Length: 160
Image (cartoon, rainbow, N blue to C red; front, side):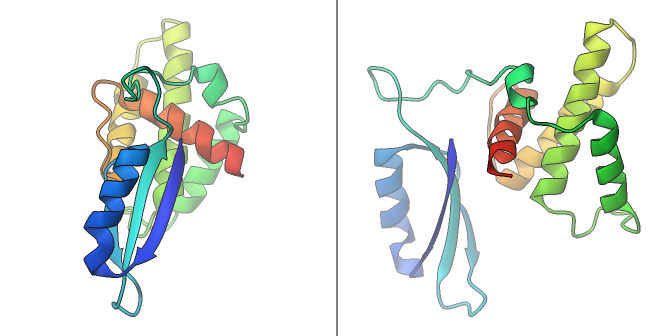
């Protein structure tokens, strides 16, 4: 999976997104004006088409071990998230990286709880954070929001 960013004339957005959808398996398009408001910025996730019918399999997610292979310790990630939240009681101005890393650390805590059969609400908190990330990305992953977090975290971690 990869992310595509395009800056274009607003009149060309439909043609561009249609062409990309024909060439790749694309996610929803996020569109914003450029700073000068003269052009459009398009952001979308894409992947190579697979299978004989050239449609991606949205149920294939990386395993937790694959997704979090490059992740720092849970304590370090919790510390980073707490530092980012400091002074922002309403989560104002917290970007995608924050929500991705927070959702990932909550997923990792939930996985540990599930492994040790520990009761708690970590799984619920992980799903809630995953939905926050999905809303930010305008993504629809069907029934596995935590799988989406793992996929996005694995991609993000390899880019760091």
